[in-house]
Structure formats: C-alpha cells, structure tokens
Length: 299
Image 1: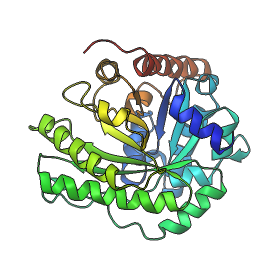
Image 2: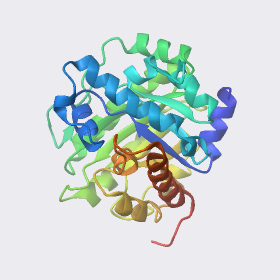
Image 3: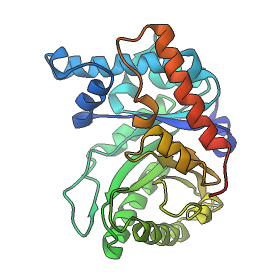
C-alpha cells in the first residue's frame, strides 16, 4: 500500500482500527489480562518482550489480515520491533493493515476537569523515524473527567497543536480527547467537546485533515457533524471501559463511527490458548467489532 492506498482504506474501508498500544504502566495490566502474571519477568526488557510476543501473535493470526481490521495503533517499541522477520509496520502493511503509532507520553495530573498530555521531548525525531518505517499516522490521548468548558477547550487546543506538528511530517494525526464514561456530567462534556473540536477544525488550513478518536457519546449521533466534516478523515471510537458487548451495542447506534478498541478487542485472549483456540477467539472478537462498525442500527 502506498500513501494514497492508505488514505483510501482509512477513509472508505469497511472495518475498524485495532489499538495495540498499551505502554509503560499499562503493560503489566495488559499482560495480566493475557494470563501472564507480574512475576513472569525479571526486567523491563523481558516485560516488553512478552507484550511484543502477544502483539506478534495477534498480527500474524489469519483473522487479523482478513480485511476486517483496516488499521492498527502501535506502541513505539512495537513499531521498532519485528514481526515474522519484518519491521512491524511492514508486517502490518503486508496483510493490508494501515500502521499508526501512539506518540503521547502519558497524562498530567487533573486540572480544570481535564488531564493534559505530558511534554513529548524528541517528538520530531520519533515522527521522522515512524515515517521512514512506513507508518501512516499517530495517536495522542488526553482525558476529560468533567464538563469544564475552559479545561476542555485547552485540552483540545493542545491536541490540535500536536496534530499540526504531526501533519508537518506528512503523517495523519488521530486526536484522542477521551471523555471519561464514568463522569457524572458525561453528556455535557460530549457537547462541550464537540463545540471545541469544531472551533479548532475551522482553524485548520484548507486541504489538511485529521482523524478523531472519541468516547462513545451519551447521546447517539452527537458526533455526526464530525463524521461528515471535510477536514476529518475518519471518526473512530474507543471502548473506554465498556465491555465488548456494551461498546459494540453503543457503537452500532452511531453512523459513520468505527471502532478503535483495545481492551474490548483483546479481553478474551490468553497466552495459554492453543493457536487454534487463540485464532478462534480473536476471530470472534474481530467479527463482533466489525459488525458494530459497519452494520448500524437505529438509536
């Protein structure tokens, strides 16, 4: 796939984006969910080797390259590693999956109801390296915990500032200002977020586009103006703590949004499963998320 092929696949492709980007502090939790307890490694390197083995097993599973997964978001170490003897981004491209990379370095402490992204030293060098490996785009996450208009505006402005840096390197940014689904004023946060994103999109130069990764809205269809916006390549949804069944049910109510699930995709996979069982389990999850991404129902 060349750049034009990747743009077309992400813009028009039937399917969803797999989030394989657990990193840092979330890695032990991801491994535990996979059936590997914390005592199974004696160093950080061994821990990351184990999570890479899990991701390589997913990427090389026949069902992953079936056409229903159109993109995958990688952790930096995963991007720099190899799968089936190839650089990971190339291994994805070879099975028709568009590679992205997570670039944020985690979250600041909450202030004004939001958690901003920490500084990203060396971002330009990382973006150059990613581009050289054939990566198509990036993803960066901040979190909205309450409906504070000023806080949300600042968080979204930071996201778009980073997105402009990404665009300058010829990569496609996925902007992810996650609304905490456990927030008491979640619906109001969704409304404020929509307004802030639309304002920032107005400031983007003509011809530039971004992607958006958003929590499933409390009111289905709320993000329709973003789905059809000419400066938005695609709107994808995170599962945000919902079970796969819940996330798929909510996603199916939102036309134009496709999944970019992590826990909801991987929750039933275990290191102890035989290859046959692993592939069958992953295939069932892929099919369920694919259907929710492509076969919509009335809200």
